[in-house]
Length: 113
Length: 141
Figure 1 (spheres, rainbow over the protein chains, first blue to last red):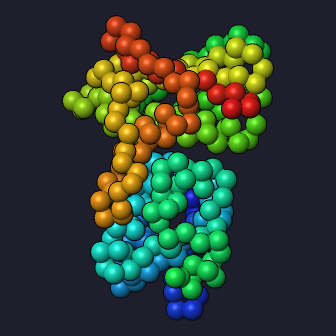
Figure 2 (cartoon, chains in turn purple, yellow):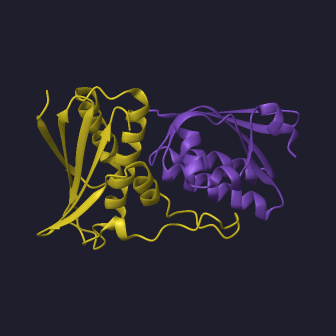
């Protein structure tokens, strides 16, 4: 059963990952693998569009924290955008909304700052 | 059907996660919980269930998780998650330090904190060799 899909695109020479569906204990490793593949290519900034993500558990959060730490250690950053509903609530409860670079739109995330 | 009680006993491993959440969802439907509450219910079930999978049976033995739900009244669902693993009261677990910066933040330790935040009615009891964790979720909570 596919519960998460990750679409990779390139905008303004930056990688954008559109994550759709549900990121639970079974799906989180797939997201982390995709991010690691981008990092292995030399990417130090990843924009992750969560506008279509409906659910995230602590296993999903582990992946986000792990990827963000790796990128930060390389002088880069994980930029998240378009969080909503339960996903935003979970990030807020766990203090990650203020810890991560979070943007309202993909364009804002691409611009950074 | 107010008062109905249903149970499901499954293996304590990641492969059973979706069976656990689907089972709880049948309770949510019986209780007529709205979609927003069902998302929270999924989260509560996953966090509690996966915590059992990882920590309850450390000696490698194949353990089980027993899920039970009841609908005491329309719009109310009560769920119990029980295991026969090592005694563990999540209510006494230390909360994570949310003030740490990214560098200092551990990657884990957020699951139980999420459960305690989203299910304020959470109760724990050790019943002979069972851990029994119970929470309620209502249409308006």
